[in-house]
Length: 111
Image 1: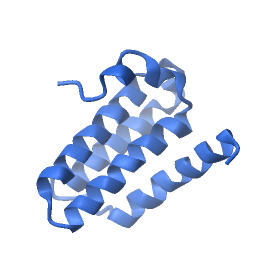
Image 2: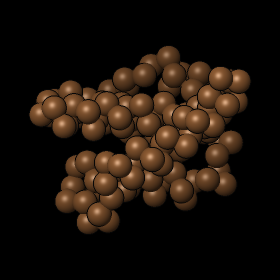
Image 3: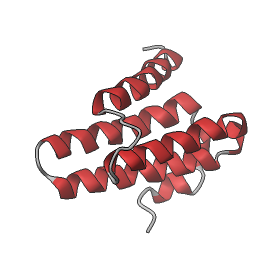
Image 4: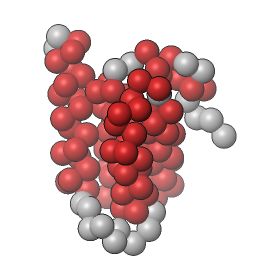
């Protein structure tokens, strides 16, 4: 099931990498927030949205040079939030990773 139908239809590819990953990061923030509040259903929905946006980012042809990093990020996110976190990432490390893209996206918009 596609969650972001309008974005999946092509609008997503008009965004820069920073804008795309900033949006992924917002859903990761929601995933963490809901998880910490004990609402595992809302946390799972937020994580599924983040994965869909990250998958769209991976599919974006302009990011071919970043494909290894993007697919590795997806692998590590799934390990962290779904499996047993064998790579020992933390909520804070994910927040920090995506924060940089949020700052860059804001700078690109002039804010």
